Image 1 (tube, rainbow, N blue to C red):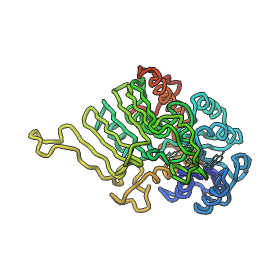
Image 2 (cartoon, protein in one colour):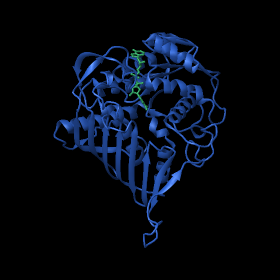
Image 3 (tube, rainbow, N blue to C red):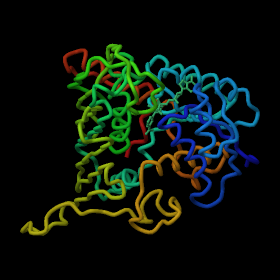
Image 4 (spheres, protein in one colour):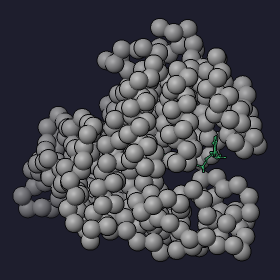
Length: 405
Ligand SMILES: NC(=O)c1ccc[n+]([C@@H]2O[C@H](COP(=O)([O-])OP(=O)(O)OC[C@H]3O[C@@H](n4cnc5c(N)ncnc54)[C@H](O)[C@@H]3O)[C@@H](O)[C@H]2O)c1
């Protein structure tokens, strides 16, 4: 076991702060098996953001370049939480310097770069993992367990949506999220999560069809200052074209069933609604990120024949569910759980793996870069389908999907 682990986070934006906070909390969940975690640096090209985040989350310093973090002897573990198009250069530089890297999803903005990153990961001394955070959502992991243990049994049909509304307003300023080719918009931003969750439950995507994109707001004003996450700051009069999708829909073929997936960044009234139903051999389950501490369960045969008390039951998360016992300071049933907790479990899992803790006494490992490439292969197939009037496109899977249920 290593003596201590020095941590840095590159990117002090919306998700960077979640990573910074998660490393801080990672030692305070579950049994104290981790070596001491030193919170060393927040790296951001904007020194004000870096400094503020370092102070807020208790990091020793801030750095303005990723190279400073790559060269630092006191840093072992680095989260890369910056625009997708910047992932490759920074991740490859960090891996070459021997760091353990946790990169945010999607792995990159192009499949070619993602594959190069997976190659670099294969040659690296350090670990390379990707932050597909929703696998850490306890209710989603619980539904997966019910599929795996046969309670729900074989998934037959997945219907999922990830609605966001951060781009509803024409006054939302231009940012990296609106730049890049077809498929780099809502599909890459939130579709990457939804496609991963669908596979987490249903197994590998074999093909996609019915790909369709639309862009409702075709130009946006340049911001007058720095834009973080989905913030709406002051904008200039100058407008530039939006290059990618506000809405993306597609159908998916799994080895054991079919899926219907829809994502949007202009879904008014839905800031962050990842929701799905999964219909299985022996029943169905539902999840809605707006109520993350519960899920719906219907088991065939539960309802009386006359149907008088028919319907889904509301399952409230409790210590018997994944991640729960010890994963919250007060881990009594129904105390509540949220998306930030998933970042804590992700950071904990990554630190456990870096520390060499055995897999059977650790949280499930983080997804590999190969899984990140596979995730992008699905997105690329959807983009090809959309370019081909919605035609069927096989998912060119050179790498594994998450272990099939
Ligand atoms: N897992 C999740 O739930 C989740 C949620 C949001 C975003 N993300 C992912 O996280 C990544 C970042 O998204 P975000 O919304 O936090 O972005 P953001 O725009 O809010 O923040 C990006 C930060 O990176 C900084 N930056 C820009 N170039 C840099 C460089 N070369 N070196 C260091 N810092 C640099 C910016 O100043 C800014 O502070 C993306 O890959 C996104 O897909 C994941």
